[in-house]
Image (cartoon, rainbow, N blue to C red; front, side, top):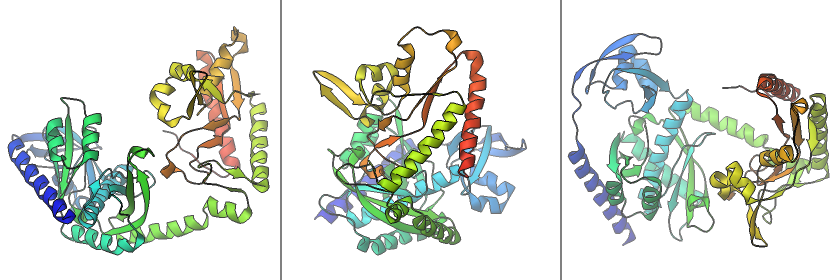
Length: 449
């Protein structure tokens, strides 16, 4: 009965999509246009007929096979989407950040379609990840995903890839979107709370899957040549423990099988060098469910921590910083003044005391400002450099906590500089030199944008 209900809403959803597509069909007037490449070269094209993919073919067939997404007049576009006017164009392959983001986003839709077919649940969100890959969340009631399900998920994914399903884009009104996703309360919540009245929202169709999405996407699912289900976990809707429990499935995909093999080798090496594994072996620190995201530093770990702090403290002294100690708890009026309360309250640990609201500090900036203002200052004191090793707390999502790289309690070599406008340049250059020195000591490199 549940399966029949699922198949029913997929059919109803597809029927409504076809009706909306027919109603919204617009023919772009065919007219000559000029397309300017990054090197300044100008190509002739026809609006309403030619797409970014056609432009790529004009340059070379090899480029057309590699290109993942285009940027038209500074905006990312699906490469099959017809051009509308004179424009500048940039073409991105998988080897670019833009290309990877789009490729993995499209792969998440493939995973979503496979999950919807296999589990008949309610899809929630499925984003690409900054560090590679993607995931999809699904509400499944009392059911859970297990590693034993992976072969069937892969089978469904491979079928979708083999079909070379195209990605079709459509702009919807808020009312049309609510009608299209009437069966899914999670999508309805997104539409209701995130889309202002009168605004349009985009959705994409890929095979049987129709989902809210800004896009853009790859031309078709056949561009994915290697796909793996990595892991699964539980999650909460919107990352809040009081909300519905969801099942999250992670995946990785590439346009070449050799890239997948290289990635798998990298993962094996990363696992060998995982700081959590090393910490356990060398008895440096451990985590406990009684205090998620808060490390217990063991004696050896504390030695390392103190040595690092001594090193930074010495560097601070060389560069004219003065160490201070600031409170951990502040009345939220301070955070309202700084703007953190309005924009960051859900990521702060707050509590009530004697009828007033207080919060643990997630950063030192406002506290240092309080220290600066507590008496009249003379310009002769500037630049004034405050350094602080104070404890910070941030209410990170439980699913994002990862060893020492994503925590709820931490200390950092944090400092703030109060100076005059004509001192800003020298102070910034000094900070860059400071960072370059410290990174150099540990063999790290960095880039600035």
